[in-house]
Structure formats: C-alpha cells, structure tokens
Amino acid sequence: AAAVVLESPSAARRAAVSPDRRNASVGPVPEPSRALSLASSGGGVEAGFLVAGSQCTPLGLGEEARPQAARRGHAREGGALVEEEFFRATDGKLDTIPDDEVAKTWNTKNNSNYGAYEDVMDKEGKILYTAAQFADPGVDYAFSPGERGCAHSHYRMWQRVLAENKPMLILEDDVQLIFERTCGGQSSGATFTERFELGMQEAVERRADVLYLGWSGHRDGNYKHHEEKPGRKSQVLREAEYVWTTVAYVLWPEGAKKLLEKAKPMDQPVDNFMAWECRENRLAAYVLMDDGDDDETWSGGIVTQLDFNGDSDIKKSDGGDQGDDPTEFLAKK
Image (tube, rainbow, N blue to C red):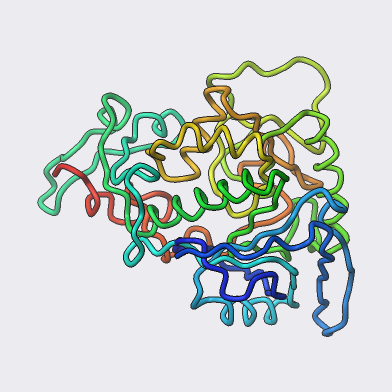
C-alpha cells in the first residue's frame, strides 16, 4: 500500500486491478463510458459492464513496479480486469512532496475520537504517551514515507478531478472486486454493476461529494457528532460521519474543490483527513452498502482491500490495526 506522484506509464491502458493497494506527468483522460469486464475462473468473460454508464471515469492509482503482481493476483482468483487510466503513486521516499500540499507531521487528537489508542511505551517499558494524551492534546507523529506518499497521490487525484470537472472513480491497486459477500456467495461483475448503478443514482440525487465503495468504521453511522436523520434508512447509501480507507471512491468536482481548499496542507493521513472533513460537515460523504451490509457491519461495501491487516507497503505511523511500531515515527520521544 505504498503511495506516490501521478505518472501515467501508459495512459488509458487495460490494467488488472489487483486484490492488493496503492512524478508527474498527467496523461489524457479516458472516455468516461469505458467498458469494464470481469473474467471468470474459466478464462471467459462472465459479465461486461459500464461504470455507471457515462457518469464517471475510472482511474487506477498504484506503484509503477506493481502492475504485473497485480495481474498475477487477479489470475489466481479469477481475474478481475478493469479498463482504466493508471497513475504511478507518489513515492514518499524518492519524490519531492511540497510541504504546502502535505504536511510532514500530524496530530492524533481528531482521529482519537474514533480510533482506540493505548498507552505507548519505550523498549524499557517506560510510558511515552498515555491513551488520554492521544486524545488531548494529541500526540504528534511524523508521516511515514508511505503515508505521506499516499496522501500526495490522492491530492494529485483531487486536482485531476477538479481540472476535468467531472466525477471520477479512484481505485488503489489493492482494490479487490471478487470477494465473499456479507450476504453470502461471491461478488461478480453483475453484482458490482447492480449495486454501483443504484449507488450512483442515489448519490447524484443527494448531491454527494464523495461515495465510498469500500469502507471501514461505519457500523450504523458510528455517529458521535452528527445526528442520525429520522425516517426509513436507504438500503443502498448511508451518510458517513467518519470512515477509514481510500481503496475505492467516487469523487465529484465540488468535493475535490472542498478537499483541496482545506488541504493547505493536508495535515492527516489521507483517509483521516477526508473523514474529518465529513465529520465537520464540510464534505457530503456516503458509504455504498452491499447486499447484506447492515447497521452491525463495521467494514463493507462493494469492494474490499487485499489483506488490510497484513498490508506492509505503507507503515502506519501510529501503529494502526496493522500492529506497526507506534514509537518509530513519534515526532517527540
């Protein structure tokens, strides 16, 4: 899950979207009505479909070195092929990232409202920061190189959406389209298309800024700041307050504009940053529910992410659910 700049090695090429995640010339935008196809395990085409007709353009974001591994990953599970425009992500170790676009440090105070922090100790068992300090005044971390590269990669995607002035589907290269669904059975081109079309229709009606196709941390809204709206709940879309992951989402130009206006610089890992803008009612964000997702679902949607907990490409500076060392990137020890 390393992220980096926007360099299209072969714009609008046919690429495999891996069941795994992810300077700077921007290539031409593909036609918005590109057809996607999902190959069956037998090698034939199971279903051909469009990404919401001509409503949005699919863009793939990932490491330049990883497309072949991505293709192999899909071949193992039946091969989900998506025709998209591919961008190499910003490399947080090698590429220059402007400080006025992505900060070098971030503070845990906002994220602590939703993420559970514990006391952090040094190797001798001495407490460096208590769980209470993570909430107030918050603990300062340096972005890990992967986190900073990932944040800048999405920043460049937002610029692209605003420049093209149309909604775009942003996919990291570890997005997984074939997986066991909450309702049972495996997802397919047909199930993806059906739910995606319904989601796009409702999102447009609700004037959404962003629609998360995969998400974590929703569970009946996980509302701690927003007030749940009365009335019958949609079985397709739910309003988001604070959700994690940026593995796949549709972003509208107005949403891109709002994010870029606040990212001066982006001062949180990208999923935390987007979530906080939503929490503060500055971004109209929704999660797309798969058939079977309900109020008890913590992670859901119509895509998933390969081995989220075992993902080692992007070190989580605060440790995260991946169990990375929470002391390595402390700004002050």
